Each structure stands twice: as structure tokens, then as C-alpha cells.
Length: 328
Image 1 (tube, helix red, strand yellow):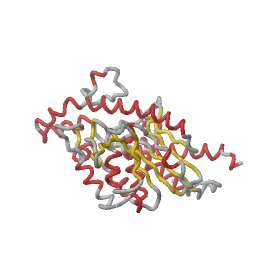
Image 2 (spheres, one colour; image 1 turned 90 degrees about the vertical axis):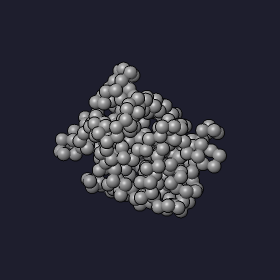
Image 3 (tube, helix red, strand yellow; image 1 turned 180 degrees about the horizontal axis):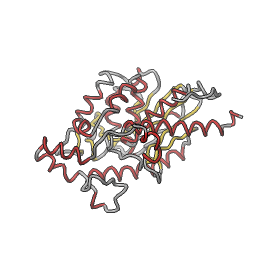
Image 4 (cartoon, helix red, strand yellow; image 1 turned 120 degrees about the horizontal axis):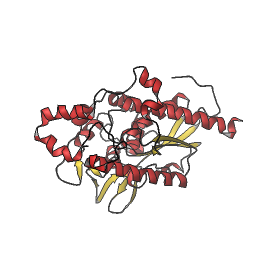
């Protein structure tokens, strides 16, 4: 990682807001790495969905362990974490994923015991409002915050039924407005689409052996069909009719599976809400990750998304520091 010249910003205390966006949220890891490399101190964290998970792991000091694990995941590894439900309000129960997360988040860890103030945002379906977790069991808060409606089953919390916080607030800036930090930095991973692909944005990375796990969605379909028999047939309506084609590339919704439709609709809603929330509470620095760079469900793409996050943070910080009046 390149060294940076000292600046008046180095060592400053920041509140960090990490938005929702599924696998695109891996970019948060690269952002945090770049911030730490420049000497920023993260004094408060607010996160939603994947942002809540990664923010919590950073506060616990386990983010790099998690990054090492996800960087080695391929399609079949992802499928082993998926426990499908044939009834209820979500296609995935989430028990296997929670069991894995317990390897990184010790049982009984409470939010108020974290070394920095932390907020995980979820959505209360019955009350139709945001719920901020700032106390209580950390893993329960994360579970609620990542429960994408229609994909994961809602999380029962007392008399409440909770789902992904991105339903109402995909970039939760408000929880850190009152924090005693010098700056608020936010990462939006549902930003406006780019006219470039991930490979176009980082040609040097992909051209020097960096990149993604080999294989396609069709590869794990074939492997799964050999092991799962009629289970694959039951999953077929949820999967894309043309595996090699992304939703962004397809002009025919008839090519989409149910999962594509749910996630694409959720992405559109989150993107619009994110713009609204950011306009209401503009952060001092906003790092934008285009929403068409990586699919919400493409969790096998950790390595390039982490690197993209680092580069986008580098560019945003360079521009911000150059234009900030404190630098003149």
C-alpha cells in the first residue's frame, strides 16, 4: 500500500457510516483499510445490513479475519451457507450463516461493551419505522439488520418482526450526527450506475493476476445438481434462466429468476432512499460505490470489491484533502 504524505487530517477522529448493498458492501473493508493507512481514528460506527456486520467486526478487531475468510469463498462455499426454507416469509432461514458468524462474534457480545459507539439499523415491519440497536446482544442486532425481505426470514425480536434496515435507511447517517467526532465519512454502495465494469475500473488489478474465483453460476448449478437431485428443480424458479447474463445486462425480465427480481427491486429502492438520506444529512466525505459493479448476491467477489473500496476511498480522500480549506 502506497505511503502518504502527512496532512492535517491524519490522526483526526471520524464517525463512519457503512451502507447496505449485499456483496458490494465488501468495499467497506477496503475503505477501512485505506482510512487506517492514513491514520484516521474511527470513533463511532453506524451501519445497515452488510455495513452493520462489517462495522461490528471492525469494532471487535475481527475484520481482517473475516476478510481472509470471505476472500477464499467460491460459489459452492456460498451455497453451503444457504439453508433454504420451503415455507415462511423468506427463502433462506439463515441458521447456517449465523453459526458461521458466531466464529467471529463471540456469544454474549453486547453492543454497549464495544470499544466505540456502534449502531446497527433494522426495520420494524409492524411499526413501519427504523429500529436502532445501540445496546443489547450484538449478533441479534446484526441478524435483524441483514434480513433482506423475501430472501431471509424476518427476525422476531420480542413482539417485533424485523428486517433489513435498508428498507428505510440504507445509509444511516443520523445515528452518528451527535457523536463527538471531527468528521462524518459515509460509504454508499448503492450509488448511481457506472458505464464501466469492475474490470474496466481496475484493469491493472485484473491484468496482474488479481481477480475473482474462477467459475460461473452455471458451474455451481452443475455441481449442485449432481449432489442435490430434485432440490435444484425446486430452486429453479428462484434462479436466472440465463446464468451467464446479469440482470443489468438483460433487457428481458423474463430471463430473471425470482431472486433477481427481489434483489433488483430492493436495489432500486435503496438507491433512491440513499440519495434522499444523504441529501438530508450530508457527510463531510461521501465514498460512492456504483450499484451495477457487483450483484447484491455475488458474495464470491470479495477480493476485487475490497480492492475497489480501497481505491475509491483513496481517490475520494485525495480529492477531499486537496479541496478542503484546512489544507490551504
